[in-house]
Length: 606
Ligand code: XMP
Image (cartoon, rainbow, N blue to C red; front, top):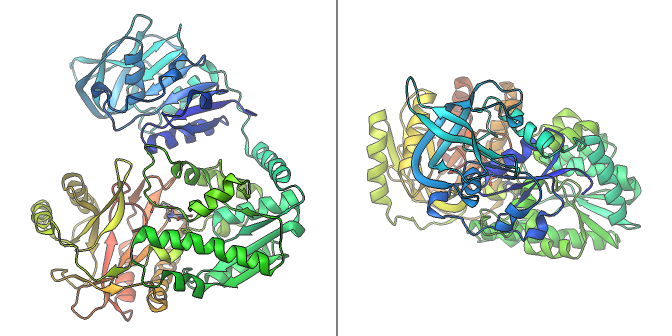
């Protein structure tokens, strides 16, 4: 390994990414590893951090990970589930009980290098059902929490063995609610593991330029350049590495782009000095032809991914570009999430990870210089490369574009179990003065790291934002079978909502494009485009007015890494304008605001 690196073992999705991000902020590389990875994959790391997990250590859940990790000659730190597994492995006891939730005060038992820069009492964030109640012979208690005024103490909030260099925190040091969590992680990574902070963006850039030159040799790179942040940063990096002559950019209008987007992207690339071998193809007919009549979301995604490759190969041949490698702006979470591991359920097939591309990767035909970076790091690199602010801070737009925002249906209502759901949801909505309707369609979500395909519910009634959030939280937490909550912004009541037979047609795409343009203009006009991470607009084939006109859903979210997200609160004035401008679009009769966090929803509907 070129840099001192920490392995973060991913027992539970979002926690691991957050830990990796915090380590990387120290300029030390962190890589995500899966618990069942063979021990050889753990070679060369300077330390290991075991993440939290939704599994219960007390019940032996998720217990079949590579235990040889504990024989590694490097320090190990565990958080929550990881802490409990360390305690168990070295002779301690974990029981089901002693639940703590939220902020707690931890009293540090004795000064210890892990707590350098911390006070005697530290605010930590707890979220656990299981607890460590005893530790093995080499271990000591490093901290305990006290429960309220005069309350009894809750032991083993932090444990450690300096002899074995094994440590555990019951709390989550990676979340900001643990006030000095960053310091604790730094103490472990820099002092206990002895990592040198060498992983800087300048270095990363130099190394990638070198790696690209080596991989590409005398060949050329043909990059699918959508105009999104990742492919634009990749384009600039390839330009530096192999020069403009051997870099070909192909911008494909797949018919699933935003209004006026392809023209704007071409202009942007020219202005950035990337216009030399810039090719443009309008492949709308290829994509819409392949998608004709298809309604199932995962099939749509596969078709879009495959069609990209087919169009790319055809264009490469037509342009006489031979011996090329396929360049992609794939980033780290894409790589990790597509890892076919036990935990990584296929929530969605990303267009840059369809099987054909996987085969090309195996054959060494794909070059992806950003595959180790998170989005925030890609933007940092982009700034270093002089990419203009607007290009770097564009909202992320999924590769399959409006293909995942224009929902399709065979027109059959999915009513199995819907009456029971309706009764449960209405009972929870009523105390808030809301009317609830479970919709007879489904959308994709993610629950406990698994894909879900469940019903949305739409709530009607006027409430302040906080109360709406409370109602949504209560419904999503308590009702199995619901993964999305919408707030009704239109005049209709959804009582007779019926799915419409609908496929991916140009007319429907144009309608979604128009609605999206109205939403994007609104965000810019109100000066909040940069404050919202992303704001998809979905077209849902659900007739609410009995006249066959559709539902438009606006989904503003806040996020850091897109692994988790919360609904963003748009200004009232903007919401009123959206009502005014979207409900008059021909073909639209209903409008809703998606209030779902991720999990249990995903950001996109499909
Ligand atoms: P979800 O819907 O899974 O999306 O919560 C997380 C983030 O990824 C984007 N997204 C994609 N990006 N290819 C991409 O490049 C894809 O196939 C794809 N699907 C979703 C989504 O817009 C969000 O930012």
